[in-house]
Image 1: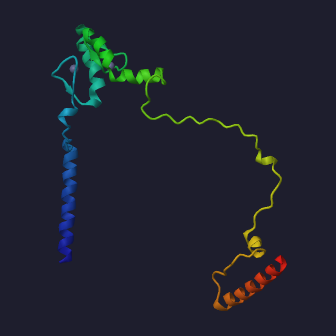
Image 2 (image 1 turned 60 degrees about the horizontal axis):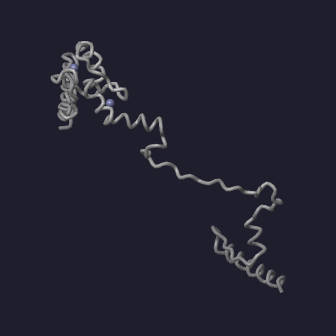
Amino acid sequence: MSSSKKTSKSAATSAAKSAAKSAAKSNIQPKIEPNIDEYIKCPYDESHSLLPGRFAWHLTRCARNHFSSGMVRCPFNNTHVVKPKGLNNHLLNCPNRCDLERFLHPDALPPKEPRPSQVDLVECSENWDDEPPAPTYNPREYSENNLIIRQLVGATPAQRRQFREMERRRFERLNQNRQ
Ligand SMILES: [Zn+2]
Ligand SMILES: [Zn+2]
């Protein structure tokens, strides 16, 4: 039973391998059809539809073929190709103009991201290095000399009992010192 399973599995693997081999031989790759909305129309020839990734490359080639068309390029984005008549209108509405304006006059336009809030520097005459040295706080020493309830963690019941007795005496001693 198990041996037949093994054979069918290996057969499937070899079939997949040979399929991959033949695909590589014939250079067939699984094609992912791009969304038709992603295509950009070539400004030189409407019948040229291009994917964004190939658009700039195509423009340089197509511009050579349509040299006489007199089309002009947008100074804000090299891939914006318009008719000379339409250039003014394009410049007013070019989405990349905004980026340039923002770069040239960062304060004139509202920023894309909120600006960090301005913090006023506060003059301070204090210098902590000038303070007299203070002894380091030692919690163990402090709790030993003050009326602080301490607990022994991780000890046997006998040790805890002994500790409680010691603490009782410590409290008595401290109380006597206070009076
Ligand atoms: Zn074209
Ligand atoms: Zn533009």
